[in-house]
Every structure is written in structure tokens, then in C-alpha cells.
Image 1 (cartoon, rainbow, N blue to C red):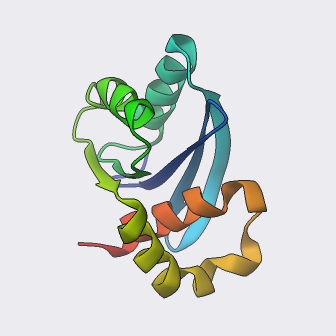
Image 2: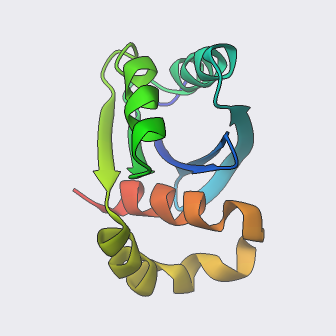
Length: 120
């Protein structure tokens, strides 16, 4: 188990896409349904991967707030919500280091994970 890992979560079509970054590399990519069981699995997965997760989520209204309920059960978690305007700024700054490695479906989640890893 790592001491700290960085995650980006993006919601699309009732699915949460999770990207985990460590040491400047994407080390994990998975999708979880936006259901009670899916969110339980997501929180359990994050708990099993690290001790102090830092999670960046693009603000998606009710879906993001519902997810927060599950993420708050993770000890030592740090969750940051990013507005669309903030995401656009991060994307302009960081996407050059990610763009060639990403699948289109996970691109936003990977940018968010990269931001979580770089930001203090």
C-alpha cells in the first residue's frame, strides 16, 4: 500500500471513471457505476490502494455531491472539487504532459489525477 496516491474522477453517462497516478504515471484506470453498489466499490477500491488519497473531481452537480458521501468514509482522504472554469485552466497547463497517453474516455479523469499529484 502506498502512503499517498492521487486520483481523478470524472462522471459521464452515470459512470464514474477513476484514474490513479503515482510517480508521474497513470497506474490504474477503471469505471464504477453511479449506483449505491458502484459507489461502495469505488470507495472500497480507493481505501485498498493507499493510506492518504487525494482526489480531484470535476464539479458535476448532484452526482459529485452524492459521491462525496461515500468518499468521506475513507480515512485521511482529501477531496477537491474543480469547477468547469478551473478545469479548463488546468487542462491548458497540464494536458501536454498527458495527451498522448490517454484514451479519449479517460482524458478528463487523467487530467484531474495529474492536477491532484501536482498541486500542493
